[in-house]
Image 1: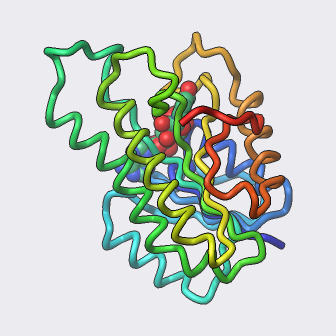
Image 2 (image 1 turned 180 degrees about the vertical axis):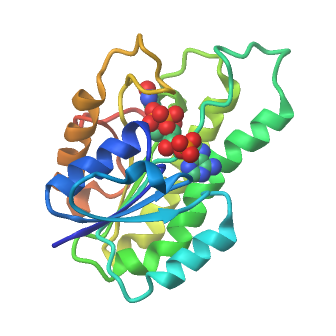
Length: 224
Ligand SMILES: NC(=O)c1ccc[n+]([C@@H]2O[C@H](COP(=O)([O-])OP(=O)(O)OC[C@H]3O[C@@H](n4cnc5c(N)ncnc54)[C@H](OP(=O)(O)O)[C@@H]3O)[C@@H](O)[C@H]2O)c1
């Protein structure tokens, strides 16, 4: 059976990714700052305590799992960082650094640490949970910090797609939709159940020719 590794697995979209893949019989490496929250979920779940910005811990986990094949790596952990729509004049440099570290640097460090595990798998998929708010082509302004962090993430995945294409690794940035999680809030248009199962189906359908695409949860192409 196939293996998936998910970051931010104990809450929101990451928790449902964990449930969905476990229900399909996959081996799930569920990485979370609070892995105790994963207790009681049925399936082949392997919880790992992981703060994604602790790069020594990321490297140690990659070493612990060396020799394993990871079919799908889902870099899901992320933060909003801003309360509402930060206007120009209120940009906080500390918030910028923190959001960029979690949303853009940490996923790249995960990809760097686990690329060999993915390369030796059958499916070979590197997934970034991005956002339509990272699109430059579809930009309504505002939310400077979060938007820019996801644009940076998109560029990283575009680079990974070019660099890893010769190894048959499919790199895709996925927008989950606006979803009712702690981050999305109660007024979001989609429930978790309307977002994560379609994302799992979209990931399952990815072919080598999809490498380098930016898609929303249901597989619809998004403008970079
Ligand atoms: N919800 C939406 O509408 C929406 C839309 C577009 C994109 N997204 C993206 O989807 C992803 C998941 O978001 P969500 O809606 O599920 O948000 P959420 O409910 O706020 O959950 C965020 C998850 O990320 C984890 N996380 C944050 N910082 C971390 C760190 N430094 N190390 C390890 N884990 C960390 C959290 O773990 P803790 O429990 O330990 O805090 C939590 O599991 C994010 O990348 C987000 O940007 C969400």
